[in-house]
Length: 246
Image (cartoon, rainbow, N blue to C red):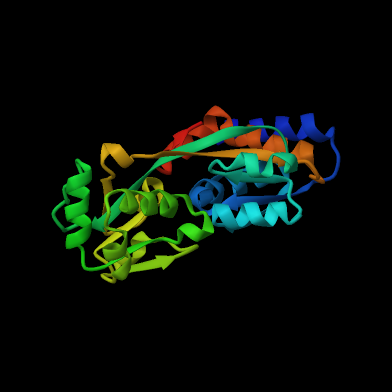
């Protein structure tokens, strides 16, 4: 912790030369919420800057950015070409995680070792929860493509609850669904469920990256926040939340 504070203090001096504290507006995909809930408060304490987080599904955030919503920093899982004119430089990788499924912790772990095994597992489930792909939520997009490719989209969608902005695995933990699709990091944060990987054909590692807005009011402070997130001490926190750094 002392090293984190020292790092933050150094960043503050480097970026502001003693100027008054900055307020940084961050438009962030829901999938990186666990990271930001842990590290944004540490950055605030270390630098006296304020971080205002605005979360949403990735596709919705891109639409907001294209529509002109102001931000200093955005954190998204790809789709950068759509907003290239709204960001400066190349996005910086912060953390990555896999798309997978949650089932009750006490239930037998279903077979998902192949596309055919996944098909059997999904068809046998009575109820499924996944993120609405229309919002651009990455786990929902990946899952929608998978069920289309194995030819069971209609059957799966008849018994699915499509949601946005909620921890999908909690529906399984509460006994309201047999199976939920979400990022591994989000599944591992929910008690009472276990993680089930997608088959190799549909396995997807999702990297969340940060980029500074072209119209950022506090670009130096936003850069300092990125540096704080990718520092070795920040990386250890990211790993503890179920992500791989970078």
